[in-house]
Length: 374
Image 1 (cartoon, rainbow, N blue to C red):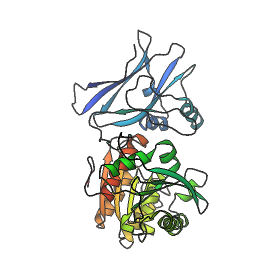
Image 2: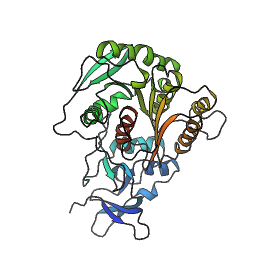
Image 3: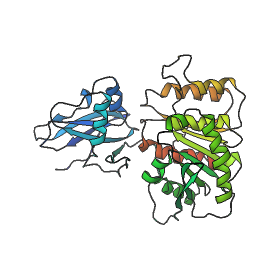
Image 4: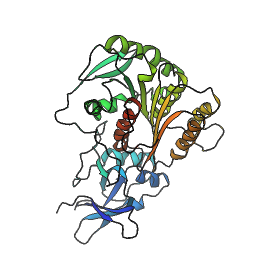
């Protein structure tokens, strides 16, 4: 019998749930559960044993996690023959290439790129709502058109109500993931139709290629290209505003670092930064090393910029949580307009796609969306 993930109360703690995943496969010797970021943390520690499913008397495989009731995560399963997979980088890449969604899942799946299988999504009852993520019936649809600007691929999403403008503009890094894979245009259309944001021109900048490490590392040339080439082009072609107060730059991971850096370097063009799980350890992952957290140090010592921030990070992101809290404390101490949120999840588009909508509603809308800390 097909069994979806079973969510049961924790008899010892009402703030947690016991979540049991099951899998039926008579041909495998074991099944590894990949709960996003949670499994990866133990892989970094060199031990995947806590995530190996146990064989039950009826022949199925199962594993139970104790998770806080507001946890959200994408997840996959990896049935294997022979020995359990190791924890080296090559072993892990092989696992990721062949892991598959849970055949018994109940939520819409999270698409992947580069030929990998989609992921299942687990959202426990108290996870932040994501009302704008999925396509809604009856919502006027905008359109997305591909362009090349200064040698960079940029997909432009135009709202259904696209007039002469000026329109608020959103620069979204890693645009090939958000546009081609995650269909962020649906989210933007839903937000506009609900009145959560005005109709916006969205510039989905492709940054996941070989130039990514250089582009998304507090690179002044890349930020100046966005400010001096991309934004004027969008103003001329699509009526995008030139007002920094109506301009948002958004990114995740290294893109989150870059979004905050853009507001630091060019507040004359980027008046709003939306950072999700930003890599604020850059350029040195060693916490508290004198070379780490360069951008946070600039905000602490430099002249205060005329910029607003929406910053969020996952409680499961053990490599980023402390550094994001440092940035939060510095921005608050310097008097910046900051909304800050910690969600119970990991380095995960299953979390980011809802957080992106919340951040845009906060920065461009008239109120604070559900689940947003200020």
